[in-house]
Length: 107
Image 1 (tube, rainbow, N blue to C red):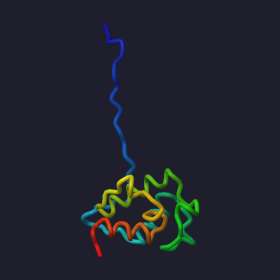
Image 2 (cartoon, rainbow, N blue to C red):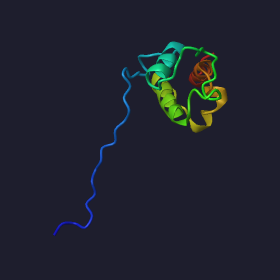
Image 3 (cartoon, helix red, strand yellow):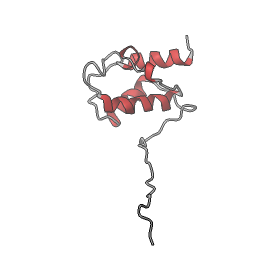
Image 4 (tube, helix red, strand yellow):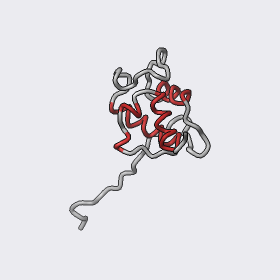
């Protein structure tokens, strides 16, 4: 007699970027962030500069936020804690890079 309920194991897949970054071998830069915004999030980067607001302008939504945080963690080796997810830390490329420097303990 077959069991009444058989559990099926479903593999969990993760999103892979075209060129995954390893924290120990790649640096997170304004250029890599802009490339990510363009290539992975599909954002028109024509007017995006280091100080351009990403969230308060509506360029990135909450779904894009999750991908961006993952990219920042992979590219910098910094773990972004929930308390770190603030507009002061992530609302522009400039703020993201400054947050990463502070989290690494850089001057």
